[in-house]
Length: 300
Image (tube, rainbow, N blue to C red; front, side):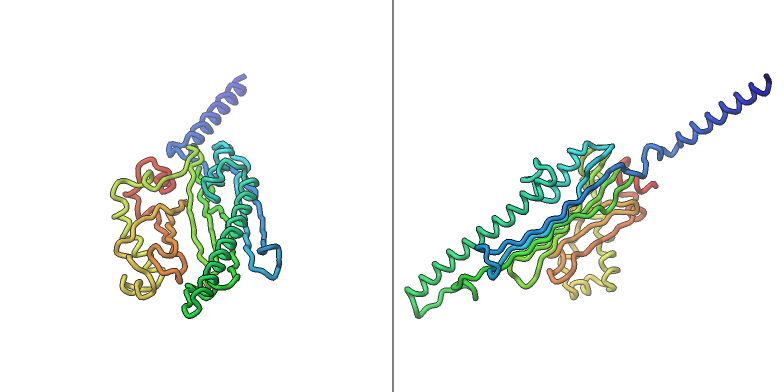
């Protein structure tokens, strides 16, 4: 009988110990690493020649859309709408992912066809004016008097950068070319708070005055990345306005810090790759707003 009571006491002590462990004073039991979000991918491509003739110029579009299909913390409808809006724009955010992809593809082809038609009309008008005034060429480009149009290209994709601790960071990459020698690529960054069900804004993770305080860290990062020691040397490489550089709200969060992407033309020439600036939480701990998602990540 005594042995049975002893076993009962031991079982109670063990249970109490387990409860204490699960209720760790750090509070991390409420800030679990794993996000229960599952994803799927839609890949489409289309090439459309003018007048259906393969000898004519064309538009070419490629889309790779990674989107959520299930989520335990946030309504999957809310999350899908946010991904669709971020990828394709507000005009498409009432559509399901597959429908949004098809609608965007159709709009791209329709816009190309319209641009080509407008160009042809302009070229025809210029030829008529040139015929009326034969001694004066009023063409404003090398193609203006010909029925030649450019080919268009676009690649649109997104990627999941970080997916832990209630945070979902992802990036949309868009590359396009409308007949020039150089393609333009832009990056749009998004951070979504799964527990709250909404996007994370820059000003909600920092204390007031953070933009000025971050300037020096951003400049220091750019100097290090480009192996130079002065802003003047950065400018020689093709950067500009570096003395006035500020956080641009185009950021990602991960476990270690915040990443800013500056697209071409913001503070650097189009010939340069879009600069990425990583700032570790340990360098900006005093700037983080108390109880913000960033400050919680910094405490891990």
